[in-house]
Image 1: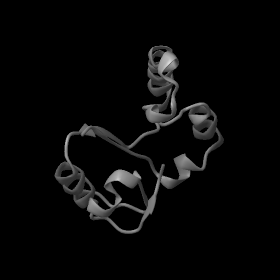
Image 2: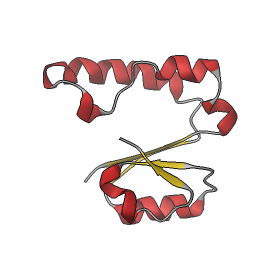
Image 3: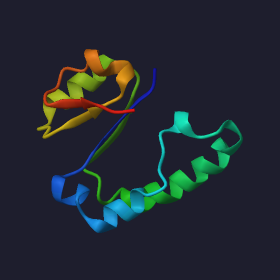
Length: 97
């Protein structure tokens, strides 16, 4: 299982610039299979512009690694994918897509 952890400060999440850069980003599972390769190029360009606004961006392979990372940082609110929601040990959390 591949899990992405992305975090940003609250004032960044509420900024207009962040919202505009996130427009058009989708969960990869929701992208049509015929568009996945072009979406990855779009995502890479968008991520390069977003990365200065993001406090943490990690890709991990297990829920244990997720719990270790979120345990070492202060989390205001976690949006967690439904497939791992019950396994992630962080509060407060809400279900994502």
